[in-house]
Image 1 (cartoon, one colour):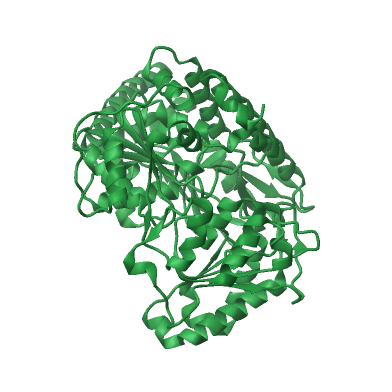
Image 2 (cartoon, rainbow, N blue to C red):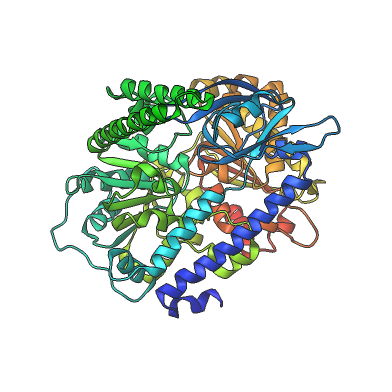
Length: 628
């Protein structure tokens, strides 16, 4: 079935189709993981950030939620960015003298992680013994069975739903059933611009669904926070979710700044005191009843170990049971207190299935970065809500899908995209951007948003230098810039182009002047779609003494790593250079939209025009830059 015939199908058939495509992705990812585990060398896993080896094991303890945790730290390769994050499953292994890996037969879960240290939840005491007694210990990401299980459960529930709100929402989102709205008057928000004000009103009036479509720099978060704040005048509590922990942190922090009591389920990625103070774990720990609960749990653990020694078992079992009842009562009481104080519950879509949210219902669910979430993940949270507000931009980063067949079948089409197509009346487009010089913005506006965007007067002519050209393309054609292939999904590298990027950066820094650069904290971003190029660029900057005084003002990352961020100056290294005009995943234009819209005042693109302009998008971009 092709994507175009999809909207003539019944909503239930569409959900079942999603399930089928998700199953393909699941099998593919599971198989890839198995092959990687069996065949890929430890060095490559470490380079990709999915493995730490060797590890040192630190202290172990029971955390506030009564989970046995252990701290581990990586001893080498500390400069490599890793992909471990809260909630992801991991497995431990040892390496023997002949370099063969032996995996322990338990999985654990990341509870907290920073650059080089990780706190991991273990399934039990025997797992802890294994780790503590192991030589040459390592840890790697494990296949994430749990997220898939939750997505399959949600889809099954949605397709079976009958005569309830879930069934209605399914039929509205996927069918011909109309959306309905409330009839009360409009509210004025003089501190917002007209399109933001319109969006907040659309959210307040929607009975079923509203979409805030926020192109780069248009103040989507500001608008969303306002909409949540206003909704709380009408509802006691709302659920706020996003695909990633980082996006959840970002919106939670903005809400806390507005004085909204937030309860964050799950651990924040950017761990600062402000963030930690509203996490569920921290609040649970600081509740006045917690010390009592703690001592009861400790007593239960001690009784268990006595019980294993075999004396007077019946008596001990009775004691354990009565203590367990008391512990449960206390836990319920603490939870009730925490949830009754919070006006916003925030978590990732997957964490909305957390046991502490069991049985809870919300009037409104807000999903931020909705264009990056698989439809199935959205349904995990939608089951808890009566109406849904989605915010994001389907012209920026798509969800990550590894199975090409599933993607071609339409798994990459998000719920947000479908609703935008089926229910245009529910969509508000934010049209005034506050980030970029007008000439940087114009191309993106014309290509992706039908020319609808305008620049706020205060940014329209932003620049660092007088009479500067805001956007330039350094054509590397004929400069011996050749792409090379490294590792399978590690992709490509173009060392000459990387060196050239560094030279361009130096030239521009010298034009600005080093004193001014430090004084005004002017910041720079180097972006490449390819991880190998990113790592190579990082090495070049690290080794070069020229950059030492302002290394902290330079960020180098992939396009995905720059989502939601902005810098004064952006350089993009496109890498691809070949005879046949092969551009691989530069074909995903949404990624390029993200890359070119990160720059506030200056955008420098480096790429081989003869290779890239065979594609209409890059041809038009190249021409546009020449016109400017």
